[in-house]
Length: 227
Image (cartoon, rainbow, N blue to C red):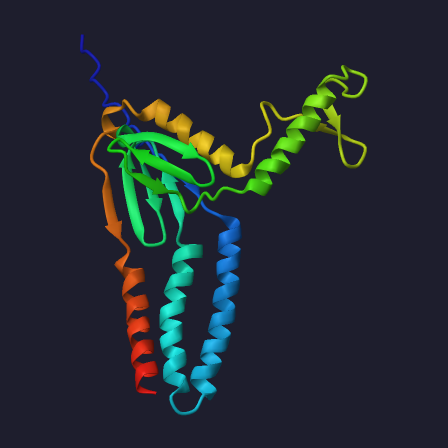
């Protein structure tokens, strides 16, 4: 009697890598695009139509302003995955393994504090006092409405804008940037002890931003000194 041959098991699909959570400022991006459009329109017009030293001056101003506008509006972002927090600020990129993150603080600015005590501001997650006040007013209205029982709120649903019903959100009402900080704190608490979330803090300067801006400033200073 023959025994059946052992069939090799089917290959398992690779486990997909977790995607980064990305936090950026929509208002900053919109403002940056608008500024770049205005600067580009005025600068290119001066380069093409200007006379004498004007095209060179306009070129120097473009070389100085465009990298700075990109740095402070389009560039800032915060990336978070299971192992580390990567903060892309205007002129630096800071990578902090979760084991090296001591705290995430919110005040007039949002910042991450490393285990060494060094603080790094999160440019991509700006604090909006106006949004906080709006969220506080909404929370106060919701708390006041919750005391009416079922007479004013039917089955846990609040009246919607068009006579329908809108679900009451769970938990307190929070500003969007405060929600982002809450998510980062939760991720840190979950992953700070993980073996893959250990390591050293690294800081890299954004020479791709600083280089063109410095070149534009030097060229502009030379033109102004000569002219």
